[in-house]
Image (cartoon, rainbow, N blue to C red; front, side, top):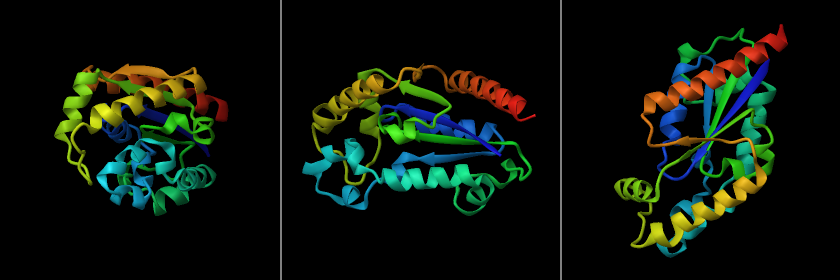
Length: 203
């Protein structure tokens, strides 16, 4: 059994989760692993003055994330049954040739061991003002202190993006202001073409 690994990255509140969940619902035999699920607990609970630490790769249990991804790639059927809580039961067929793993997160392309396994890479981007407005409407624990977006979130996004672009060259950049249906259709078509290519190789 082959695993097709699709990376959906992007800036905070850029639409990563929305696109990933829509893609998952549309593709049978698919599963999502979200990078946000691997934040270190101490980072979740730290005092607000240290919130800048949340924007770096060290704030995440990337070893645990890689362990889960490698477990799925080794034995997709067992992993999907036991651990992938977001998988809809009706979307999995045991006797399938290809499992689609959707990995979403804001730093997925900044971690080399993870970056090396992607078959397709997508990055959602939105303008500064839209990103700031969306961020202000979200509730975080702990909440963002005054000036946090301009002082930490946006500068770290620019820094992480520069690092990402120095590591990866085949990312498809997506306009997060496009209608959700258009974004989904574009990515879905691309992933389906790759699925057909893999299935052809397996026959």
